[in-house]
Length: 456
Image 1 (cartoon, rainbow, N blue to C red):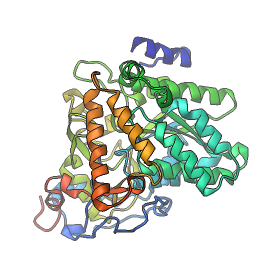
Image 2: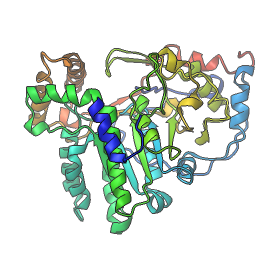
Image 3: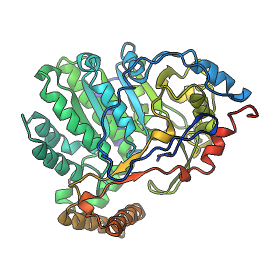
Image 4: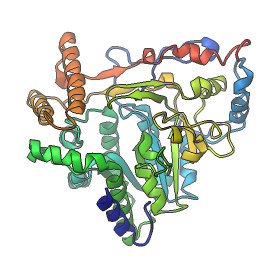
């Protein structure tokens, strides 16, 4: 870890570098509007227009309790939509970190698309860093993006090849990033070279094509456990290089969950090892981070066994529901939301004792929880040959210190394979769309307790 931190120090010179889907339905005072993909419905992620529209003040639509009155009153005064808010941060900051929801959730990538395809982003920023995607795959991504006039079929095959090898997990099968890359390619085809949006993969380097048990074991021990500092090093070094080449240095950084936290001290009094922390320390006063509306984990033995619940017991979501769930963005500071205790990370009492305004610069509400969904699977990704390769990758972890993580991955993979078989769908065409309100105990009741004439 010390060596990795020194790498960042050398990259910046004298500067100091010190899931979660909730799907279901929301309707004011208990009304319900079913959300989900019907059988045969297209699962391709397309951009929504509401993110780019200017929000307007929204009056209360139903009765609510006194407890959430400050939140509702605050929301009724707001007029700035999600895209406007994020782009506005670039007037003050050079680096804006967007805290991603659970990786497979697709609507967040609609918002990211609306931000990064906006003419103002193209003209003034033009650079995106993503947490996932092995940095060693950057030449392959650049080659794809630089290839002119690829047919839809050729582009699909190129991106499938990238997706198969881009993660330190045996497989990255989330459709949202695949569709984002496809749309980014099409956008860049229409832009002059000096306006093309650059995307940098920032995760640890890994080569599945030359993988052995020993290399995987070493990679997890030396790289995966030090991901945060290494991702930050990647972002810092590439950003500095872009500045040297004449770029403004402005960039959007997509980091998931705790990786996007500002510098915070843990129960041992040490600064937590989160990627955004190093960005804040590398560029003092030049970094902002934004939380997307989401849910909070309450327990997690592995990445695949997360149990979640509503932020602030549903107060935030209930307040937005009262005003009609408009897309909005605002600063945490001087808001009732920012003054709330930080219940997004219950695993460390010192961090949990903070307030939201201590951890995030801003907040964006984009799509109510009932409209958020996971789409797992990309058509054409899992042909028979690659299915066997995924299984072989899983066996490489046997006997290592991370065997349990791969075993959980394998369990989920085989469950999808069985589900596909039960449906009579080839795994190569299988796409799972989750709408899992049942994962949140008493979901509707937790919102309704804040709503109605007899609410708290």
